[in-house]
Length: 223
Length: 301
Image (cartoon, rainbow over all chains, first blue to last red; front, side):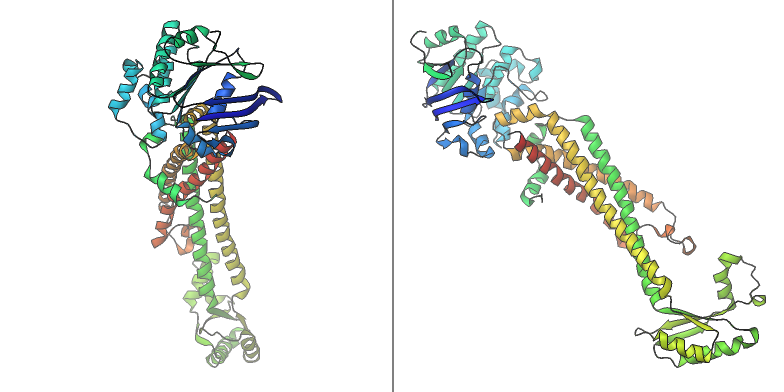
């Protein structure tokens, strides 16, 4: 689905990621960890075509990311749900409208019932008509998750999704991710929260990748 | 960039959901509508000026091209004889359709604007005027002048060429200026709307980021902005064109003594022309916003 071959990316001539190779197989669950500034967000951006590798090759659903037009990238993003730590919404629309936004922009429609059901699944049934600025951090993350999965994407990428929420909410979000994985979705969560990774390992078979010294390493054994 | 018909059709078809993804922007919306209204108002006047000068040029060109004047200046005792001689010459000149001596009343009417209504014409050495109407083929002015010099030395032929041509030329240039003004107004409208659209795009950077994240294509994002600006321009231009037409309609009626100014306006079917201004303004807004939006989105990719 997503494949990196000796990918290098940096800012201002300094490499942040060097010779990174990675393969996200369908239905897999990955954690991406590493210290702040290690390049977790950059790696995720390379995964959804927001950045283009400076060296090496990134293939998104079999297509070389360098050859993708802006329209192609838009189409790829309909197959990848993205959740950020500091999630952005359209503040003039309600939560339900924000959740349905991927459908709106792709010209597809879903019944009000389907949208309500999804919002209920993430536990926001009472906030569906609220505006995003009225939501708490945890509610925003759950709304973002609902928006990320409404198109039934094949891959879900989450960048520090539990960064702004308490432990109880972190576990709730994790449970939702695990449920999605059991439905066959490919999940990659970037986090530096080792407790979250430990909690996940009790529920799902997850690979833990660590970025250290610009390289990607398999780091699950000592967790 | 020429707007693609398909894009224009999609825009006209509209998409209520897509329209909502861009937040309402109060001041930009009002400024765009106001600018379009002001420009449409000015366009109505430029159009009226252009059409009026066009009519004037045609009138001067056709009316004066087919007529000439012979002025007979002679001592009182020779006046009648010379006038008769001129009429004889004209009667035998090929290309002359009709000729007649202006009556005292007609000459008085011509001089009245300068000397007032109580002009004692019979006591003044006023030349006699003979109006000459030509056939379509016209006459040979040089030959006629030569014959008049022999038969009636006090007769001077004025075929109007001397002052008709500069007047027609001036009217033609005025008409061209009117058309250039319309072009400049359209270009200025495009510039203003481009700036407004660019400002709106800059102010909605987060909206664009979110839309891209959820898989919106550039054409979709652009369309949301383009539709909004096009409709604003259409509404503003419709209001401006209506007010401009109203102002033109309220101008005094054309009056022969009022000259050019009272002739400024539309006649008959010309009243339909200002109705083209709102859709044209919308087209300009569509092209300008689409170009600005796509360029901005490309820049930020």
